[in-house]
Image 1 (tube, rainbow, N blue to C red):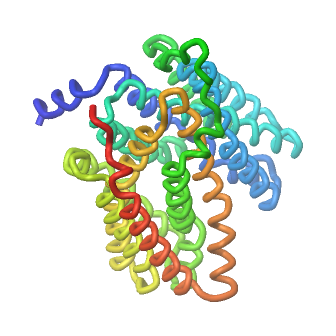
Image 2: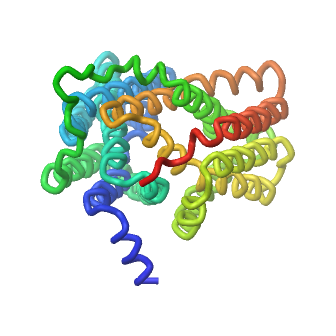
Length: 395
């Protein structure tokens, strides 16, 4: 097993593993966002409405950050964008910890989402720069794994810090964010491809929007995002109506991260060798069966089963989605392609809860879960229709 691990590490560039390690440090210390609502209500004494506003502004900043980070990654470079976002995000976390008035909380929450999340497209573009196309599914799978591993570590550490004071919570998050920035500063070179030759027209954002394959692909990812965000909005409401407690809901959601941490590493090479369209189609079907199964679930074992089913889809789908976006993007537009994909995910996260809540209020949760199944089935057919267009180019 140790020999296999060494071979896997040697098969990807050292710069990639440096970013991977920095991501682990950053994610393991990502404390503030999950506890922001509690901080605003319990520590600052504001109401639930103010907490909702602060979180919405944070999310809005994160959505805009996708496009901003992608544009900067292409214009000023991956490394510069990472440094600006990580060190800037650490500074805004410190400012947010000192904010007390509603205007200051609102402005700094939006700024934290905007600055602190702008590094995401740059990371994906950097990986596309240094990892050959044939290896990208594995590279993005390992990144997906470490993000989930960090999320598994963060809540326990965050709860400990919060019990000692929310000031410590903000401080540790800022320190780990700055530590990621320091890793980039000391160990990661600029990877942006060389500029166009003299007289060659520079790449523009409109080039990405005129790429029909890419637009069709991100529309499919938008539909997937609409379904996935129901886990955090419609699912707890439906569970509560079925008599399942919030604590049980949290434990069931933890199953998702645990399964990813346990099973993604051994499955990486299997799905990386397969054609991408069938892998994505089968993954979408697994999501559809899982979310459709919520309509039939009434007890913990059944919920555990359907969560396991769609988690298998997630294990295969998300690394391949990231690899396809990297493959579709021209070198001069990698940041903007990744930024548009990130912004599409943010838009789905904003719209999805509204749609899910409206369907439950005006119809029923069963109709919502049946709709999720149909949407995922349609996405699977869409991936098959794209077919060979999703295949990786020759290394």
